[in-house]
Length: 257
Image (cartoon, rainbow, N blue to C red):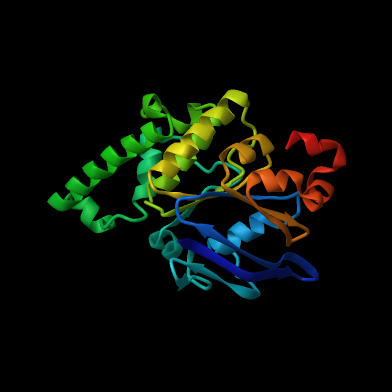
């Protein structure tokens, strides 16, 4: 079943068309990738899907609801979470506390009820902490729960941001360049985490430049060039698509796909 439907989405900034009439579906339970050269419109597309930008044309349907015009907080509560190219963590908090802050976006307790330490808020906070621990273990960070975010190496910081996004209990997780700056071992750990997340019932849409990771984990790939979709399909077809080779990789790199 299609969880996300993007239809004829267009976004212009002055005379520049950053996203040009893009349409695709993301099916529930899948890992789908969006690739393309720098400036292809990938991050702008993500910003549209998460309400940081509004399209000039087109529609975005999530679970049969048109979410264009919704504020970001409503998007999160509807079941869409995202990470960003640059990690945005609370450096002086522990890994566990960072994940708990993500959960607070969808919990019941407000400032006053939490300050009063009402019995139900205490129970909720305990449940949040337990779930945060489970999410850290899910992404492979269980042993780092008490470490300060500032002390974590780059690869673990990426995984921590994913765990924090998962704390909002999304049905759809958008990952913007999660492998940026990772070494081979860290990228392999990320791939394993993505499989575990998918197996937990979370659909994943990923923007990524690491072709090895994309080809390994993706069920389907959308390719953008200069804002427009030039190809879509499973990795084996994308590997051999002449338009992808010419526009994105270059002829000499075709064998690397």
